[in-house]
Image 1: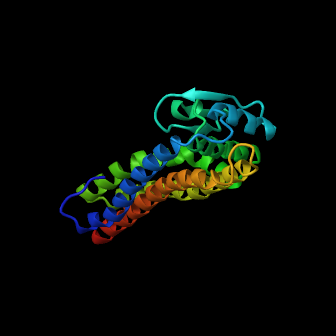
Image 2: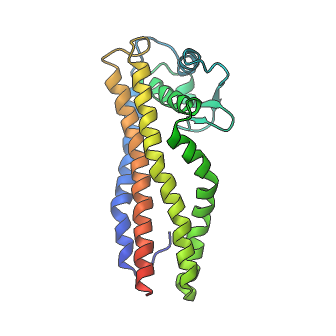
Length: 227
């Protein structure tokens, strides 16, 4: 986001520092428990397949995707996408990530309301995030308060998307721990390791939400100075 000689920019510093810490935490925690092989010894793709099948979701394929920690469940094509470091790995970290993404598939299958709301909000939130700053910046520089207000409204949609993402991710992690706790895949000693990986990942969403909220506060503060 643009900035200049403006004290409101310092509102973003706490969220920026939290985002840096979250990225460090998720990478370091995943790397740590990627070195610990699960007691079951099954690769992530196999565990994902078995968890989906046991939930009656045999129609959902498990596919390898490019990139680092790009694992996700796509509700549009009903596919579980696993990164190479998770797809073939039997590590505790990999199984935690797999179970989390299966948790999203379960949410989709059971019409979990926050997920459905977030999915419907995606196109509007994407458009809002693209238009918000140009509109606000144009209004601020050219002295058009209406454009600033439109920018704030558009950015608010992106903030709502970030906020609704939190319960979706927390719920998926809760489901992950539950389906892994039967002892078939992770032992009682391994579960806290998987939980640590999921908690670190959740922190990145908390940081993103904090950044979005503080950016909105900053826009409102800048708008107030124009009155």
